[in-house]
Length: 452
Image 1: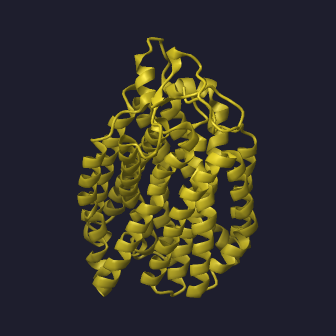
Image 2 (image 1 turned 60 degrees about the horizontal axis):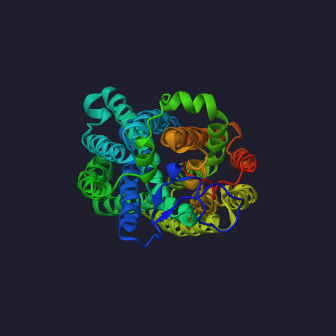
Image 3 (image 1 turned 90 degrees about the vertical axis):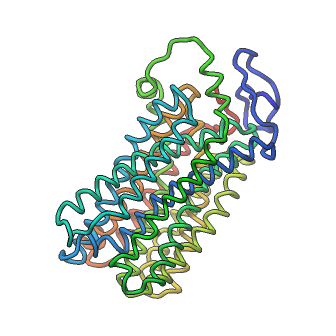
């Protein structure tokens, strides 16, 4: 085991200490048995929770407009379906605050277990929900309520999973370790997309009648697996050290607002970039492709293929951020995204399968992966240990609302405003990535920061 070190310039890690009263023992290597268990728990647990969350996004693109909002004009039905999607994102900061408060007070591990139980229950209930044709207006109302519960659960999930990996890991590998929690997102997206695609192909014409429910009901099995894994990990050493200190502390949210509001704003703006990419490509883009008549199963399969590439690029970009710094890696990613935004939108909406596939591979796989890899460690490192769960969750989940929750609706509205042209969508995407990159440049390098 090794000790964390005092803040130093961005140079290879040394082993100096800020004092024995403020030291924390962390793993000497990511290959330690306990560290492997923690990384697998962060990855698998987050993948399962994001399976549930992204499953809803996929269903909102291809199912819910026809099941819960049937009878409306198709464009209005799609807009309403995306509205229920946004409700989940709006709830994520609330989940981040609630789970962050208790995660900073009573422990990271307990909150991870609770978030998984809540998410699983809400997802299964969506799979059992009667349609509007059966129970009328109550169906979309209940659907929105369950989506809000999903949002609260996933809002608490990321902070705990990322911090468990970050706070156990050696300093020189924190970015790569934290990326295991982030990588659970595309892994969950792959699972959700492939399951929906397989069920769609297997049930055929019955998919909209009852087949869409199967992926939601499968969540019950996945949640049981995730619970077994999560119950075996040890609590964060940073939290254990802080809990031993007797100093009186303010409420975490009060501390964050009073002393770390600038960090929240900059981390939120920085994290918006990959969320915008995700929303435009995997939600709005998928819905446009299906509306243009492309085969639904093929569209979903290409979405899954792109998510697999996202997974690979996420790990690579995170590893690079440990070597060259978070700011430099995120700046490179932001510039790549700004330059490619409009061409990707043109490919995404060209109406051919090859153009859609290319847009997903380049946009979702490459651009989003480059942004996604370093962002978990970057956000978490902006805050001190005693309020890290609250501060990081507030910033990260706030970014999900601004960057992903409303983006599909905004993109759909911009298309209508521009008379079917995609130029405004491309400009919006590039503009959001520019804001993300500027926020990163306004922060200091954090990869060698002391976690206490």
